[in-house]
Amino acid sequence: MFGRMMVTPIAQVGTDADLQTAISSLLRAAEQADIVRWIEFPNSVLLFLLVPGDPESGAVYILDRKAGAWYFVDFDDKQYGGYSVSQVEELLKQCHFLDLAERPGLWRGSLNWYVEAGKRPEARV
Picture 1 (cartoon, rainbow, N blue to C red):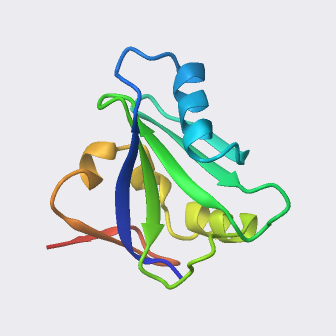
Picture 2: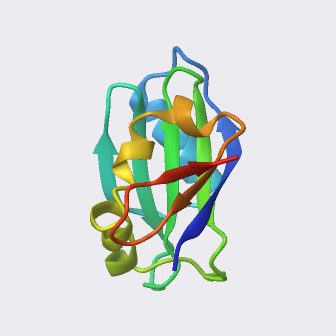
């Protein structure tokens, strides 16, 4: 589970949008999924959303406050249906994913980031 991180821009909200407006924009794009995890940083906001009634449908989204854009984060791990709460907790704790989530400038570049349990995220060319 996890591996090469793939980041896809999904909604532009603007750098002057307040957080509530930005989150509403994401929820519309994500078809009103439920917010299960919400972590704020000065430069970003991470949300983990689940489709109601489907505990294996979770997805990670990050708001890059400086770019004013939401990004969908996925991994090249064949976990096509989404992630469970326990899997995202593993991502956050055992994979040190917050190291990347709080610094969007790191993953907006041309480097490929790899996320694995028990290791800090690693950039590869």
